[in-house]
Amino acid sequence: MNSTKRQKKQLITSFALLLLTFYLSACDVLFLEIARKYEAAPSHTVIFDPNGGVFSGESVGDIFSVEVTTGTAVSEWPDEPSLTGQSFQGWNTLSNGSGYPFGEESTVHADMTVYAQWGTGSASHYFTVVFDPAGGSGVSPPTQTVSAANGFRVKRPADPEKKGYDFVNWHYNDPLTWDREWNFTSNEAKDNMTLYANWNPRTYSLTYHENKGGITPRTVDIPGITFNTLLTFRATGEFSPVFNPPDGHVFLNWNTSSDPANPPATRFHPGQALNILPGWGDLDTGETINLYAHWADGSSGTGFTVDFSLNGGNLEPHLPPVTGLA
Image 1: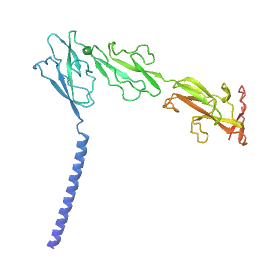
Image 2: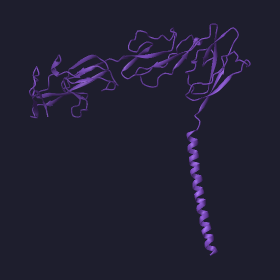
Image 3: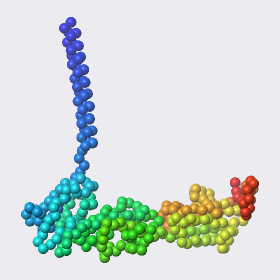
Image 4: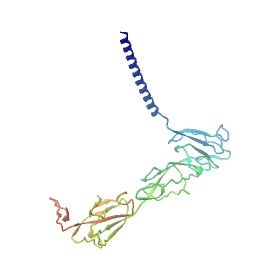
């Protein structure tokens, strides 16, 4: 009897320990998840160097430092330092003022030191300069903060890229009118502003190839094609000289492949219109759009004629029959 009670007691104890172990394990997992969720984002130290000046109540050479969460702007700023005979002109990433101005819009991505800038004029205010790539690829250049410390000069960012276009320069008016190009050497920012990327579309040529195999083919070049050009494909008989089919053949279609045995899906017919957009055809690798005439054997009896019926309508002029191959 006592043995049975002991076994029951041991069983209950073991079960209780099992439940406690499971509970503690679950608590550990939950704690780790909570800790991971609320783990502090990395931060960086920004040091404000008065650069020969002094902060109020401090000694010469004392600096001010603040911790800033990565990717954010400084929220706790020091009081403006002072320097006898000089006025404070803002902060810069280099002591001589040749770096980037550092202001309220500047974001922090690494430990850094910024330096007070001094001048004999009145204390300046800051202007914010935003760069709009106007459809260019990649990350937009970072916003700049300019001040009298660098003569309100904007530092030229890296040129953006745009498929099918050549970058011209940055402009500071509406992006639809390009009469005011920004001069990074002489222009000064007068207010908060946006600089827009200006693009020139690249010019391509369209070449029609007669594509007669062993016969010396003729070509016709159509220059001056740019992106967003609505291109209408021509019939072979519209060319001068006329593209005559090989003996016993009829025109089938235009194709970006010269091999009629294995043509890609990009085939076009006379009168068909296409809006030329970046990435179409071989425009990424060259400056010519090549279209090859594909001819089919017209003696095999597989030709067909399609007549269009007006079905009670009154279309003038009447649509002519269209002859092709099945």
